[in-house]
Image (cartoon, rainbow, N blue to C red):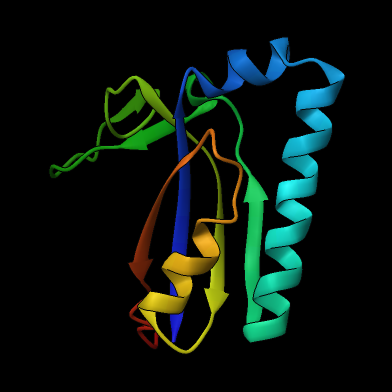
Length: 116
């Protein structure tokens, strides 16, 4: 089963810009441990860091589909990155998500794998 892991943190981008070398090294080590654990129990389908929210554009609902600057939702937490993993269950996905850097809230959501 595939699961999307959305990583969010209040003030994420400014915190990362201000992080010292030891924090950056620990966060990278956490990501490496997560990657190894997922690979041992399934696979990483995709994953990447995201740009700052102010670089986003949102296509809104409506007949003319207006476009606004910024993210979909106004929130203090900023989505900084994501993974799509393929593992046996949501319980395993949650267990693995707990290995991601402790600064992030991680939303684990099943991917429906809709065929287009």
